[in-house]
Image 1: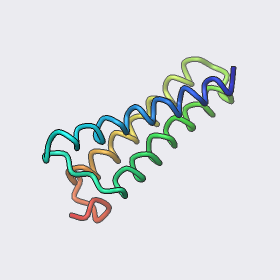
Image 2: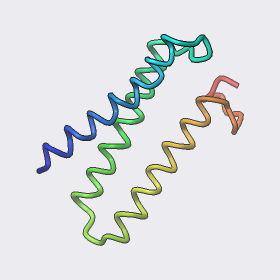
Image 3: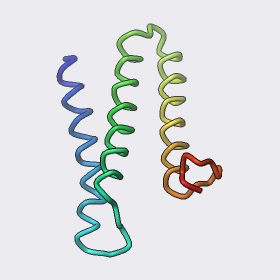
Length: 94
């Protein structure tokens, strides 16, 4: 069961990374470099694995939900900052 969830996490990461890869074949609007794929892969995999650790270690279902939502919010904020630099940090190259 545990390894099945890991396979699901890896599959979801690959599918999500295929979206911009396929889009790059049809339009010039999507212009990802290999470093973009690596960074996003690390972010997605890290998020999935952190949520998996929370699911295994945290007992209360409310606590699991809150912690996983916090992890997902962190992923979203990092993604937005890297994409458009909404916070204006040097992290995004602004």
